[in-house]
Length: 242
Image (tube, rainbow, N blue to C red; front, side):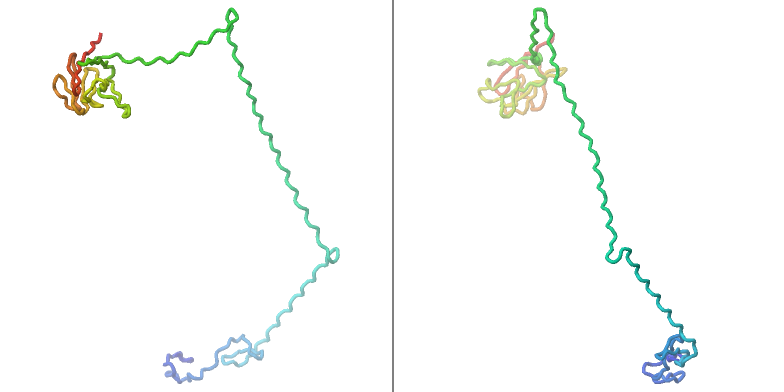
């Protein structure tokens, strides 16, 4: 604890200051603001609370009187008239919908009258002409019958199967009695320079002039070559251009 006179720090619980000897148990009364009043209406003007000669405080001014309310012009119970309600805004005029132009019925064209008083008979519509098939470039002649014209760039040789969508140009279904021809057996094609045959991986193979063909390999054909599809024998006859 610090001494109240010399501000020397002392041990807590000391009775006297070690430096100035002041009694720490009986400190002087606290310093009061000189302008403050005591309980008797006097001013504290000294450090130890002795009264000082200060001028008396000014009395507070008296409150202003509240003005009386103005009387109503028409006596008691008068209330001002209520404001008039706002007038509604007149609705905007709506333009009538535009009239639809009436469609005039199409005028019928009069058919020209020829001499004799009879109208001409209209011509019947012509059916579209069927597309002509290309001319054959070769024929397959069977040893046991059968003649097939080769007309397209690729002519499939095999047996028909409508359920699988197989419709060969050279259909050997009625000629192959032993069942050695596959559905997609071989194809005979034509390009700008030559005519060729190609085996399509048939079960019993394709032979050209006695030699077995490798599947997927194209071999050129000449007039009079012998072709064997399974056990069915054919001879090719190439048509020479005129």
